[in-house]
Each structure stands twice: as C-alpha cells, then as structure tokens.
Image (tube, rainbow, N blue to C red; front, side, top):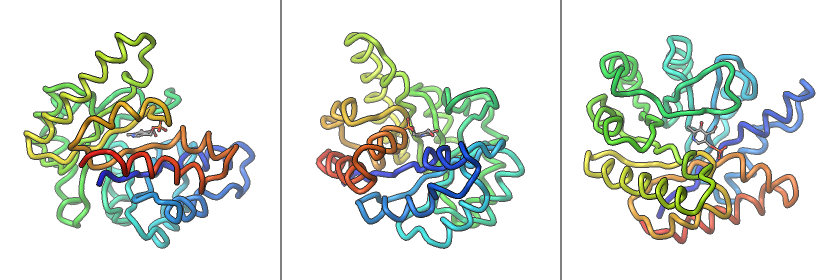
Length: 241
Ligand code: PXP
C-alpha cells in the first residue's frame, strides 16, 4: 500500500511568523501519525526559515513512524543528518531566494560529489532519496549515485494551467515512475499535490510514498489536522501498489 508522508514545515512557518513557540511542529507530527501519516517530513533549510534544529532533535526523539529529512547536500547538513540519523534523507536543491523548492536536483552533473556525500550516511544506515524532475537522464544518474529512492517532482504537473498541459506533465511523471522502477529504485512523488490533483495517481502503481505538506496544512486550518491527514491517508491507501 502506498504511504502518506506528511511534511510539517508549514506548521513551523506559522510559528516563525511571531517567533514564539506555537504552533509546535513536533505536536503536529504526533497528531499526523495518530491520523494515519506513515512518515513525517521536515526540511531543515540553511536559513532556518521554518524548521529549527530544536524541532529536528525533538522529532527524532518522538516520531514513531519514520522521520525523513529534506536538506541540501552541504557539509553542515551532512553532519546534522549523521547526528540525527533520520530513516531517510532527501537531497534537494536549495536557493535562498525561493519560496519553496523550485526544481529538481541536478544529479547528472554531480554524480561523484553526490556519491561521496551519501557514502557516510549509507554507512550509518540512513537511506537516501534524490528529489528530481521527471527527466530520464536524472533518473539514470540517480541509480548510479547509489540512492535507494528518488522523489519525482510533481510541481510542473500541479502547476499546469490547461488540461492538455496537465495531461502532458502527468505522462512525464508516469514515465518517470516506471523508469525509476526499471533502474531498481524505489519511487516517491511530491510537491504541489492536493485533494484534487492527487486522484490522477489512482491509475498508477509503483509509488512508495506521497510527500504532501502545503495542501494538508491549508485544509487543517479549517478542519483540524486529524481530519485533513485522515482524508488524505484514506485516498492514498486506495491507490495501487
Ligand atoms: N517534496 C519536496 C522535496 C519538497 O521540497 C516539498 C516542499 O517542501 C514537498 C515534497 C511537499 O510539497 P507541498 O508542500 O507542495 O505538498
């Protein structure tokens, strides 16, 4: 059964808006797990704009499902990941000016560097995922780098304005999922997925994990996290393996 992994960054965004301690993403993660999340995701950004080091440490001590850490491939983040030992790291490109992660990681151009970066993490038993565009060249490179997982960037599909563009972008994601599996990789998807556009995936097998944050936190403002996570967990649980 595919897993729902909930990204709680935006709970921390709300907290940081006032610089206090509420709402706490650690408490939110606990509620997400009770409501059906099978993993908790946080992105520790270089500028610490939402998730803080304190959050990561507390999440490591309290998350009972799996803790997935999104991060840039920098020496600082490598050290933090080794100290924290999440179940998985997901390497993403990071730009200071962006509102959210904008594009996939350029794996093709950085294979040696990324292999070297991942080696100590693998030695410590931390699995690795690479967040990439649905691009065959990047998928093949991800296989060579030694990552166990890829996460296919669904942002272009989510942002497509016309039905034709949406169908075109979706086909790219579908092809990328199949190609990732052919390369022996486990495949996750994420970015911009919501309670509407997720249904296109009801026809696709081969996806391990749906990584969703913004849409769930937005819905939770009106319905509460338990309902918001539970509704998405039930949708994803109905999709094929
Ligand atoms: N996957 C990755 C790699 C991301 O950077 C993000 C956004 O933090 C997500 C998934 C979740 O995207 P969204 O918040 O749009 O659901």
